[in-house]
Image (tube, rainbow, N blue to C red; front, side, top):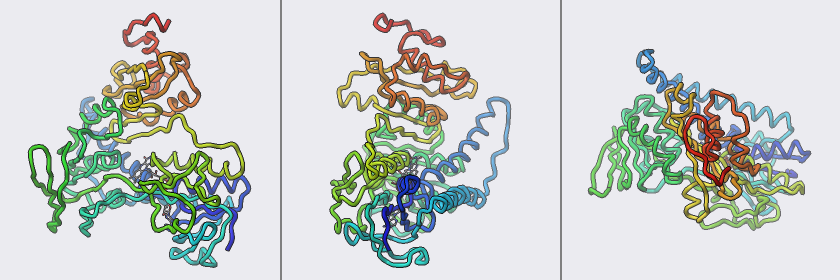
Length: 475
Ligand code: FAD
């Protein structure tokens, strides 16, 4: 079998690339080991986690309206129906992708592929009815094999009481207690889900803070809420052992006070993800890997092998679905000889906890580390009519502004729905907008998105709802 372009991996990077390539007139084959399209994001990542977080949010809002004199009974949870509904979300979207592939005449092969050389893939397993021969030769390949959860050897006990994110999303039951190992975004999102469903959730993190990659001030309002939602948050604490006790897992901890142990019904190991670059036969090509196992690419997503491009999680940080799709489009345009490069000013990131944390562009930690001079303005949501009406004033919107040009360099938001209002910030940074541009764009009232305009006004000293006198240099 022969194809002009093969895309290896049917995740958000792979299917975005395959669909655009077909739209642009290329003859495309998409090879995916899973019988369903969608990759980590749709099958065991972004989408199922957000479906469950939606339910968690409804449950927590039903408690919050107590303060408004509205009382709901404690919710009864039918875990089988909940799981089935989450699975329906996945199958609806995955079925949609299959339909779209068919309409675009993208050949979809369900098989595990490995490189025999720079222009041949060996196909095995999956559904042999989707491929006539076990070898596929190609002119170009876009590698989009994604990433896998990291599971340290010492945590592999061979029991499903110790789960990775995929296991946690399966929602086998609502355990009495759950320990989340790792205070990154995946662990906190899943912890939020299980806590809302009634599990006693604890989190253990090696570093002194949750979400170590985030600006500290953005994390504080979340930490305050998680302190109430979770049973325990153990910072600067190491997990030294996991022991299967049959009906529970005994976890050994080590912190400044010394060693101790505690039992949990289940443990979620969420200590990061690694690029899926081994076992693909890449040694039979000229593709190069860096010391962490990411495929090395140039700005057009080309690897060291002239026939192979790489995109998404396998091609480097940040491991995010929207970065993968964007790179997929750049790779196709580059193949077609268009002047496309992956050179974003801002890759947005959202932690879908409650409150959410969202940021784009330069962060304050990065500005400090790289000695970039910025002026930081924070707009407190306590001054936002919408936030007060929602009873959620703990958030704030902050802008990092270049003091000379007054251009917006970075934005951070913490508060409910922060992720949904971040997009304006991404456009502002990409377009080189100044604080005045943001302040003078009329924002709809009353919305949380207004806080972006208000923060820019606060920088200029012209915000209506807070008193912050105007500095002479900004006149
Ligand atoms: P993947 O989506 O990993 O797809 C790779 C595909 O390649 C897989 O389907 C795999 O089966 C296939 N494959 C691999 N090897 C082979 C082979 N040899 N032969 C054939 N097929 C192969 N990102 C966000 O942006 N927002 C979020 O809210 C978010 N939430 C997440 C929550 C969780 C719990 C997890 C685990 C991840 C989350 N992510 C989120 C990250 C996101 O899922 C990834 O960044 C994204 O899926 C990467 O896309 P990709 O196309 O590079 O790879």
